[in-house]
Length: 454
Image: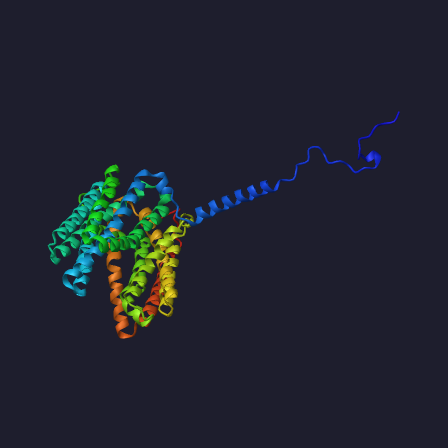
């Protein structure tokens, strides 16, 4: 009996047929879908690593409200700062009188900054933040009222600026000392990056909006918007739970105790010294008017660009800060960032192309943001809660006084040599100071956020 074979089987010389369970070749549309899916997954990984980490805002409602309120208030305060300068100059026609606005704000900041921190280590920080924010709102309302009434008294403006600085010096240490209680320690670098975004939004958006409002409706419009903007901060503070400092409190918190604590904690002290090196030696802000003319043949608009460039770079650094949470050697990161600042400033003193100069200033601002994120995180994690207010007070004094010392240093060197020499030597002096700190404090280079030591 003959056997019947299937067609194309080996028995009749045909080639073997494909197995019945073979996987069919993917269609072009399926390949495209897979590639798109992989591309989206890569972009999500890239975004998580590059862009600012929003998890503190997403995970913690109290922090989200405080951040939003601070952002809105910061924009309003910068609008008021522009309005006060414009109003003083309009009333007096004197650049010296306009310059005195800075002095009237500096003195209360320095004088009350340390005491505001000491108070924040003794009382309910939520209540202190409420008092400070309410005081700032009242001052803005007074500024609006005097502008609407047309009083035209410069003394009122100076007094208001001084009161604003005083209320800020009281409220700011309390607000900053709250952050470690609002987010867990592993999210503090991300929270500090977001705080930097908030601050630089105020520095960039506030003056622009202020200029538009003042040009269209007068200074009273900027004051009124600032007054209303404080509602966001007041609401955020009102919703917070009580924020009494942790640990044992013995009577009043002493400013001297805070300074002694800082002196005895080498890592925290080194972080402050690194910041001072950047601000004193590498801050040529006072030379921008001369640089605009001598370097670039520019005018007041060029000065404005030079002034805005570091803030733009700082905002960019904060927006692309998703990677900071993965850095554990935060001391080394601080020194590297301040070194980058000094090198960028020194290079700025050598170039004569405006756009390249602006790019270098923006790079310096970006480096400053990275340094600030890690310095704030070290201060919040390594310091005990009962000392955080006083350390934030010292921070205010350093931030307020350091740039003024930098203005004096850069101006003095420029008067003896030239603006270019002052900028270049200042940047290099900043780098030299950082190298000296690294040599004197090798433990700071080894600081590990997983095992924080003050």
